[in-house]
Length: 306
Image (cartoon, rainbow, N blue to C red; front, side, top):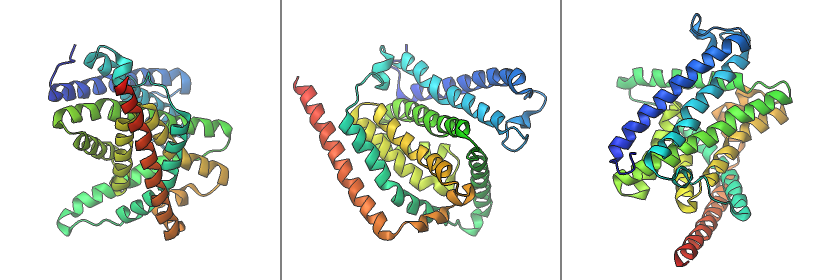
């Protein structure tokens, strides 16, 4: 229906579909929460705030509903509106290569120490005195996001572990890649007529969306890598995998080490990585990225030759 529409029109349609889907799913979730948890959002809106009630599962339930309504469903609706073949537009109908999957996993693991160091640098950012109001708002937003993450990462059994893998790692990895890389990146590449600018703009929006400004730079860098991974492989499952591995690492670490969650999320934990490990990680990440690029470039040439 909107296949030949301008990027601006497609961007506006994207915003409308995302908002409409989110609201629709939220209303359904609020209605389901009444019989499931005996809580009524319509009479007490604070029930969705972590810590507002004793049952953290209510917050996790609404997080699940929000992820599906905001990230999972809209990309499929938008792909149906923007293209004749939904699967082809989102690159979800592509086969994966085992070696490439391994290279992607290793690459994201190798860059984690550098990302943590970048997060430490980013967390010490200070704005001019004239922008103190903005810095205070950013700090409060960061603290709120950290509190929510801490409450979610409290795990007492295997069931909590599986639920956290789903709502913290799996759904965000799948949904955010479908929306940001599958939909928005395509729009911005079409708009700017430049692959690199399309990837960078999408990565900036991807990072800004999380409203965690003291982790903005590392999240943007990861977004850029995921963007290029999507462009090189022409397969959404590789950036989804990389995103999942990055997200699930903290869940696995907290569950199996019984470490204090607040300490695990502290930017000061970056000091635990020796500089030699950071440098070695960057070197191996670069080598692995080159291998991924060469393998995907070679495949593209073979496909074009056929």
